[in-house]
Image (cartoon, rainbow, N blue to C red; front, top):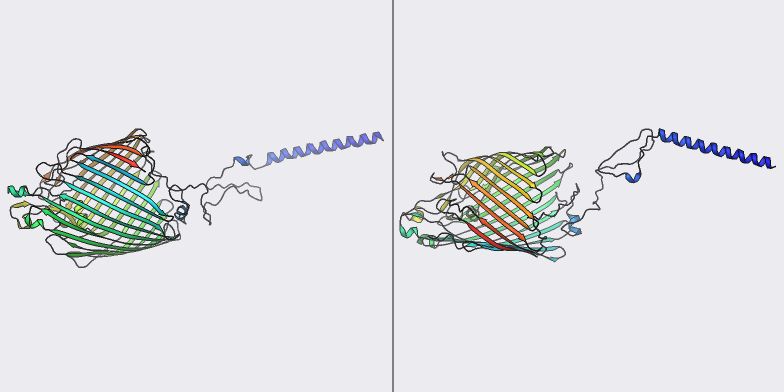
Length: 578
């Protein structure tokens, strides 16, 4: 009996050992013949689109995903940086989900202002300046902000009063009426004055005559945006302005002179998405009209109305195409009705990473008001009948980034302009024959401008030292006249450098050179070179001081013939963030 039991146990042990040996041999053979990689599942990380196939397997493992899913979702790691959660969701386009733009980089130790920003200082010639901004949330879906800019001077000339004041204040509100509807309302006022330049005369009493032109104005507008996505929807804009000018002068005819203007603008834009990536179809209707009552001249009305269709699309993630075809109807002080073709075409193509080509062409009519002209030339006499301008322009531009921190831009542009505005000084103004050169008036003629330009930026050391420079050469010519456009240079170079040795200190310097120009009489005006610098120290996250120096070389030059520009000036001031 015992022998039978022992034989049974021995047989059972032999069978178990054989089965284990066979199983191990089979497992080793399967391992040697397996086509699957020896990968720990925890080491697998899916990035973008990853696909893999293993021959011999009936069911392929799922190791990738479709990068263009039909159901769009928000990245769970996406963090809002400014808006609340509802605003972030509303700002996401339906066609593509991009990560949010990072906060603006601050070169100093200031924190981002939460409620208000204030910078104010004073400079030579008793020149105070201030720049202030404040914002507040008045309701869950409504914000209000306001801004003020102010600068003035008692003048820098001893023989002639050259004082001025520039004051601009505005208020803006933003209201989200619904998930897809927002409304923005803005309003503002200006209150400026500027002393005029010295008259050209041999009469001693007229030589000492002074004139001051002041302007008070109001502007306002409403912008209603009914968006379906960030690229499609309906946008309606209505805005207007009114400006009143007064003259205070020692010249008897000009002493009681005044001028005024008004303007309205209305536009409607409808946009819809196409079937391709970043494809947008847009229809635009826009009209601008206004009235001008100049000094010692007849009141006139003007208008510019445009109807256009727009198309844009991104091809192969490399070529961005934008094109529109439109028709504009224009009227001004001399022409009751003129019809223009108003096309726009722009192509941006990325040859490879670090090399982009841009081609652009357009035909665009426009009309300036008295205030726009005065901003261009502050010695404008407000007596000219203004005309519209039609510009035809084409340019080709090349941008390259050969290595990190360096960007080089170069291009060529050609402009052909109908009714180009330039400035002259009138002879015997206001019927005073003893004055050979009065204040500046606006003249209009066809002109052409050929320009070659380039730019260069370089981060010499990231966040510590950076440099930029821009230059252009141009040939501005008046059509039908053998001369350049008055007061327009043929060559210009401007550069700046910024240095931050420590986080709390920023030092900047800049320079500008402009070649000689011709006056309205053909007389050559000398070239000039100006230097400037500034510094800012952030003492705390909310408080700092700044200073700046202008025209360090005390260059004696004239931008407008008959007016010597400011010499050396220094400023010191405070910066406050709340």
